[in-house]
Length: 298
Image (cartoon, rainbow, N blue to C red; front, side, top):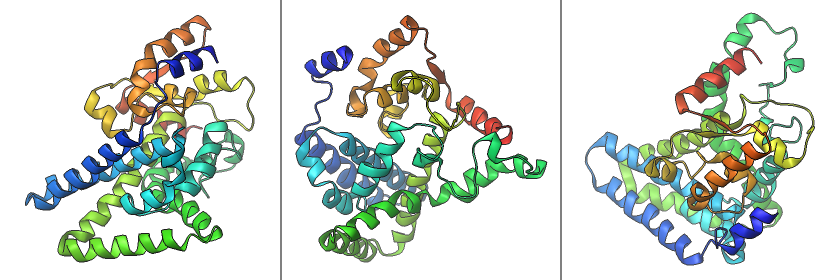
């Protein structure tokens, strides 16, 4: 609590409406316009993917934000810029994930249908099944992240009778299809790819670390045990990844905007050292390797 008060006094939790509007305008208008105008297919597809991935992370920040204005209009703004209502995911599913990271039956990120995480759930499974689990996760499940992440947003919008939100989604996608013409299918594919990359990042930040049926320590200690950072801290990579290469910091201070997480990282690292807590950190290839090994030998 002392650290939180100090960071709050330093303005590190501030998420201004002006910054939100400026970044949304730059990412949605500038990057997509540049992608639309270029004739190089690979560059065009990459810019579309980066812009949509970055928009997802901006609204991820909004869902955590203390800015009441942007939170109040989360569904409307996300429907315009991402193409889906985000309130259901941000306020229900994602908040449960933060409260119960890697706790089975409580962390929605682990609620993945036929894919099981705990060794007790995999007893009697064949060696072939275990060896193909990385394929099941990365190829059969994660490409459908766009469905699993957005479904709860639509369910909440329907429950709350937000027909205005659903109409915005319909007209937004219809208008893009008309304006983009032949390149619209590639734009839609980049949208799916952006959500897939979100799922991959979540996999690499948590799932190779301990997974249990209950917490056995305080929430802060639990975060240090089941969350990791990526060693890569380059500014461009941090921007594209929504600051989630500082994932321990994000889970300790979820209401802190992602662009400030790097500022508290040295303090968090020292905190872990002082209290003899693990500070998990590895490269992205290393995280992929650890995730694959954990899936094959849970």
